Length: 272
Image 1: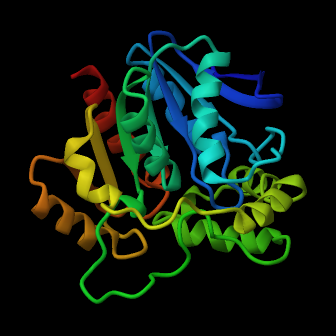
Image 2: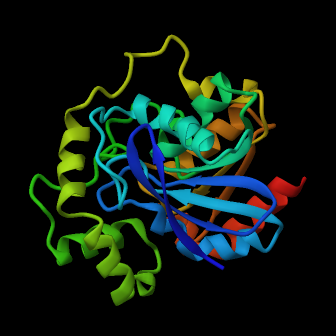
């Protein structure tokens, strides 16, 4: 039975959704305006049916979790381990959507003792650039306007990220819009001012993925933004042993567009 609960993490009241018992899997939402644990709501029960304890939490500054003082990606990455500590979880697998996929990979490199496996879902920052390609629209976590969105703005953003627009039900639209305004819009503005990282890395993360010390599954939608399918093909050509899957009729919210295939791939991966 899906449960909504709250826990104190680093002084922040943190909301999470949980279903099932067994090996812990923590699902991490992306950073675009309106993102929250609710993007995983339809996936939690199918994952839980495979003897998994599926947990999705609102990251600091998202959903119903308090806004933090530190809006950097580095803080939200550290917060994942702090959340695990608060929940009494010694080791878990991570599923990271969009920007959170790179956060999960980073934790697997730095905290191998705490991370069992990683699924990176629609994470463009883990893919190589196309030859002579320019910037492909907004980056991960940058999607959103300069003013608080209207309901129609929220609908347009969902349509941009979904292949199947029929999934945008009145309930889904209302919830996404509610998570896009007020304190969450203020947090979005602060994140855009925060440092994006520690500068250009000597070796990009995508060139080190084959060295990740834990098993990695990568999933992308064929119709996702930023030429994701072509870039994923480049990565697979460079590192043929990577566990990579491209899903057809699927854009950025792959866990919605291709829910059944996403759940099959992840549960097979976690049970292998």
